[in-house]
Length: 152
Image (tube, rainbow, N blue to C red; front, side):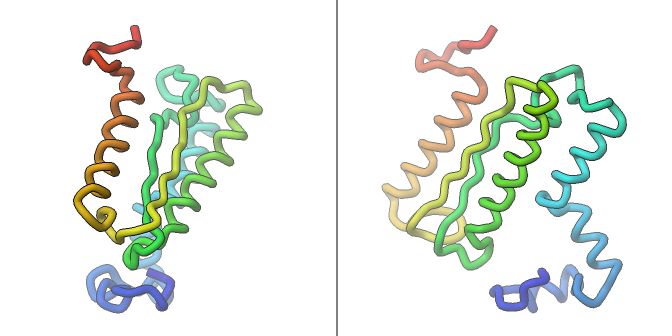
């Protein structure tokens, strides 16, 4: 919303406000910004729990495994946004690793060379993307090929 060179920014500002000139709009948008909320979550975790993740978990900030997706040709969400999010999450994980937290959740970034917002172009590209997402989900949940969980 702050980059006026992006498509839809002026149209969306009618709904969300202009964070560059309206402090209330900035505060509201920042409150649900996934990127900015990583800092807030890390600060809260270390201020209120002495660095331990919620529930005594060793996972970084209590986050699950994460698959971030993007497309080089996405006009709505430029590919650098999920890349920036992945990089920040990995930096926070490095701090967690230094504090002895392990195992840390997996952070994967998948950027499609074709397609745009939502999916690759063509039916086979969409199917391949969907299969990759389901494969990641099944792995993260511990589901093996036979449909039984491989985690106890």
